Length: 171
Image (tube, rainbow, N blue to C red; front, side):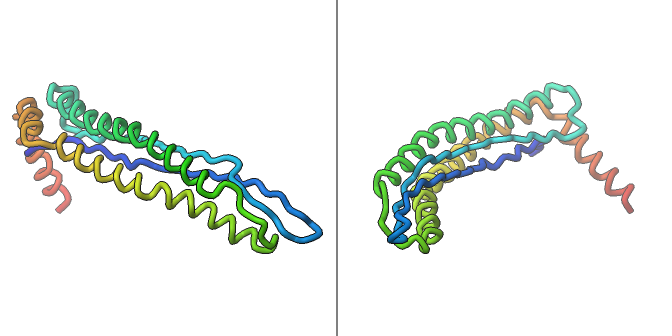
């Protein structure tokens, strides 16, 4: 099977948490709560195509196949973005405001607040990864590969010949 292309893409998740505090300086106690939470999801796909494809119908078929993968990634990420937002909202509501606690323990409680948000997202991210893997496997069906290879009959042989030439040149 001649693939001729590769899609490289890993969704990136960035979580920014801003906390607010109110301290009673005389008692050296404070309260803490979530002030702002931003969850950023980024997709930056890179598609690589074999050099020998040039501007052929094979190149277009391979490129279209790789775009199917990108579309799956975007669709799944969009679906789970809403679930991530709901999980964060629930996590915030569970804690609300915390305190009073000793002001000297502020860093410990900051870490707990951050960890609480990360833990709330973990099951959603796990489900996202499972669904993305399952849907990507459907894109890579035998029927899809046969369809793409229908446009690439001469390229598979040409690619093999070019690879053997490159191997011979390296010796």
